Length: 347
Image 1 (cartoon, rainbow, N blue to C red):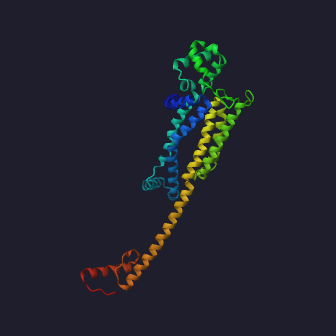
Image 2: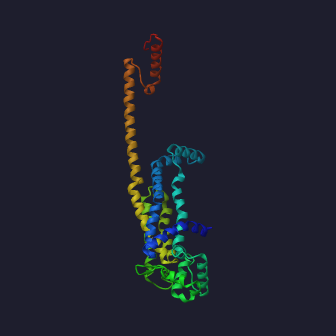
Image 3: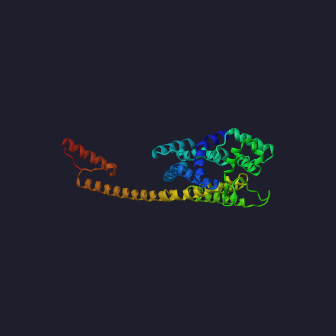
């Protein structure tokens, strides 16, 4: 199921990656361009999610008030929250959909990165299956995450063993340039305790650092981050550590993609919070509500004053809401007398 989803969404993104590679003829640079284009394509979803976060922040105090008021009555709490959401024209799922939609997209992106023989060189499934069998027969170690990159590495190290797939396939394979800044992105970085150190160790470190930076920026920009307590802090550090570890298990090209994706995510978060900052907008709305409440309070005082003065002078009262019960009765009697031409005396 997982592989099927990856391949379905990997197909359109595979053509995009192929176009980037045709443009620059370098795997690393193509990954950079590919990441930029994908981030631009997904930007509308990020904007929608940010707007949803801002909207939720605006009436979060009302939500908390309902939760505190009906904490011992979950049924009533849900009813009040539903009424509030309907009044504010807000759906709690509206902020989740952009995130959920990105999961199959991410699967497709990983499929593109993991399978360069399919998406960049456009080898047929039969050719890739034949090369896979050769690699296994030679006893070559294959990455569980990106076996096609492992096949590429073995074929480049021993092209004669792959002669059965055809000279045209090998010639096309040799055109795949996976070198980037002096690093072979087809190789897997060594864990320090499994094979020592090499230049590729820079990539997992960068992946971990950028993932941590993304977590920190996301948490600080989230107006409700404090509500997560210790759990939020644990996740903030746990996910970057997992990113660091898994980058040691996949070819360096995957780590490069993760690193560049993290960098662009940081820039995107900062830019969106500059345009649609939840804290700033919430504070602005709060000030506007306070100013409106003050204005309405002054208007009520003025209306009450006018009503009292009209009562004293025997004039019609525009708004009887500011009168006492006794004054309302007097005003009703006066209006009745005026309507039917009866005499009226103030008792």
